[in-house]
Image (tube, rainbow, N blue to C red; front, side):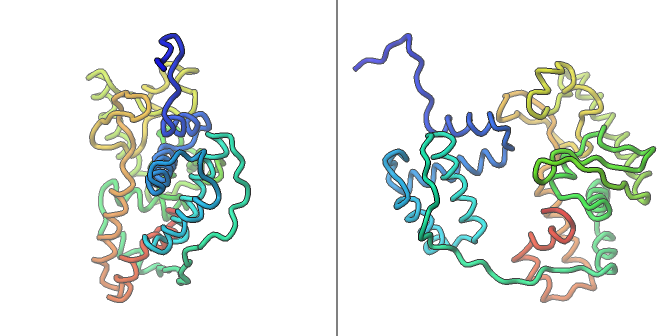
Length: 290
């Protein structure tokens, strides 16, 4: 049967997943993760449509991840959340409670805890904006992505405070601005100002605006207060809007730098180095970066 040219084509399933996620204002990382897991779920079952599958197929996929792929418990849970999102929010099918799941084993590990001396030694091996970010994370109690997403308007030097917006649980909070980094942060923001002015002269200078603010405030995306405090070195294409913008630094930039600094710190034992290489996320959780 030929398609009616006046009837719009129904979006492909993965495009429907993306559209639903964006409607609910989930982050770009959640979108990428959920789409990946839905794709893997479908491919695992030889491209069968999810409507033709159910609890049995979900359990088979999760068991495959735990037994054959040897994923962590948190990764398996993430895959399950993505699949349940697909059924409930995209296909409008209620799966309910998925029983008899073969769970990946959750390892029992003690968290890595740094002494003050170890923190000082790690900081000595950092410089520039990496040193500044690490001090904000450690001194103000920010998570890694909270630090990277800071905008110029979120820092109040007169009240010595930082406003963290849309943090964990979609909550805003106010935390202190460490006195020891105020001068360095001001100098850094002056450097970011020059970068922003250069972008504006070249016809760019816009940043990502949360939710519908870009439509409500047409010119806000180019305003100084909305610019990221830790911008990327290069402009890039926004995967959602297609606009060329300067986003914030990639999280791996700071992670790799801190990891290298830890290895150089003389007071940290060789055994701890091995633990850090394997369980880096525990380190960042102690530095407020989870």
